[in-house]
Length: 337
Image (cartoon, rainbow, N blue to C red):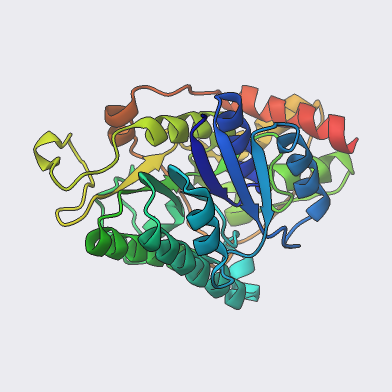
């Protein structure tokens, strides 16, 4: 029998890529997604159609914050691992609709932790974000850095998720690995993300908004490289309270719980201007640039320290920005031209 994984947010950008990889690797996947209309639902439906082409994929369309949904599902299916990716995303949208972040990111994660408490999986893997580093200025960001100065409500809810998961890990012995993602991009990306918006605007002959006058740096991470890291961490030995004597340098393993947080990034920050140049080169078309001040909640730079990830799972693929952007542009042209 194939191993069973429960993936929340399975029709989302990262969730779709992870589910497709797990299915290709022979897993049975339970994919839960609410199919909310934060962005184009038809894009989610198209991702879902691809996943439903696998015999070992099961779709559950439901809101994870609905009491009992996750508990009943885990009781019936008994997944070996749980990968929690479902969340209300977006730094800027959290200024407009903060309640949706409370419901999805806080209440939804609580429901998942309660379900895992009643029906413990062998390993839980839960998504966080580089945004939790907030106002930290010393880089690269390491997992052991203090993270108390979040600059958006989105980031605050994800930091709360880390704390909630740690408490359940300590109290109930749940092995939990948290991921901190760094600016993920690639084919099937969300329409609210910079790459999608830039390509769409350039093709339509409209100017693009360049925040902080282009003085931004991001640790852009190609989605398939990210998924490779996640899959390797799925199969890595889950955090154990008795493994403190096996710590690697800079390990974030909790002293009181089988809980760890791991950065997943390329560890190669790129100037926003260079990112735009890569888009222009891939499209063969120059962008009209509308330079603007930095937006509330944004940080000027991100940069992942990935030494812990490398120590745990080895060196990951490192898709170049040029290749990754070109792959997205090809996908966009095939689907939206």
